Image (cartoon, rainbow, N blue to C red; front, side, top):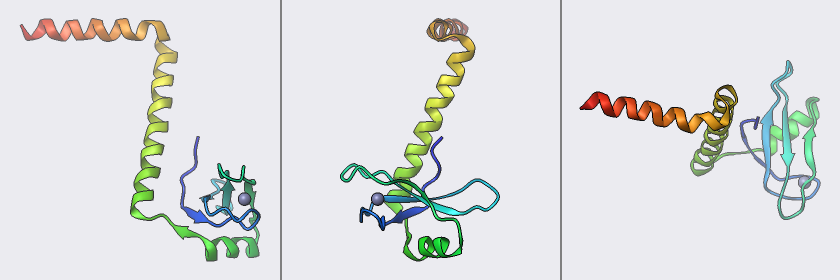
Length: 113
Ligand SMILES: [Zn+2]
């Protein structure tokens, strides 16, 4: 599952400005960044969890602007939607899902008459 994007940071290794800042879910809640730039190939997930590393991220992080917040929310919503559909299909069995939908659709159509 994708972690929420808190902001962007210029990657100190490859100078990509597309690295994304995230917060660890664990006990320390440390900030880390992910550098997966299409242009450079990226550096990977970089965790610098001690004081100087955290200071570096806080001082260099650029918070998302309004448009980026909206885009990140849309990506998160789409991911959630995909995993919800997958989970539902797993329970019912992928082949039966369509039949069941049309069965219920017919049921409600008849009720209107
Ligand atoms: Zn990088």
